[in-house]
Image (tube, rainbow, N blue to C red):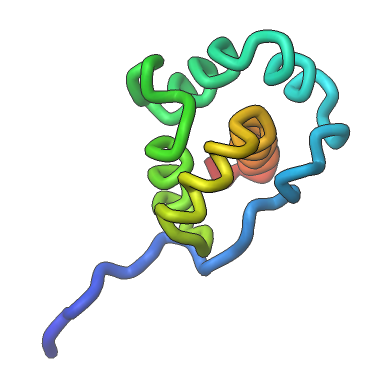
Length: 104
């Protein structure tokens, strides 16, 4: 039997909150609004990555790939270009939900 692809640890599933669901967690929203680099560093720390990598398209792409969330690098770029704060908050909310559910 020939294996052509690696199995994914998670079934394809969208982010657990929408991009504009900032009010779902006000502490994350406030952190993203007033200290976006701090929130990015928190995400990088959660993912065992370099703090300088916490913001932007690369981290979003890595996170999507890790949890088998549909999308593309082009979409990640556009989302981060036009709304970096919302994109960063979305990832952090997703991490916190996955932690509570024992998936992270």
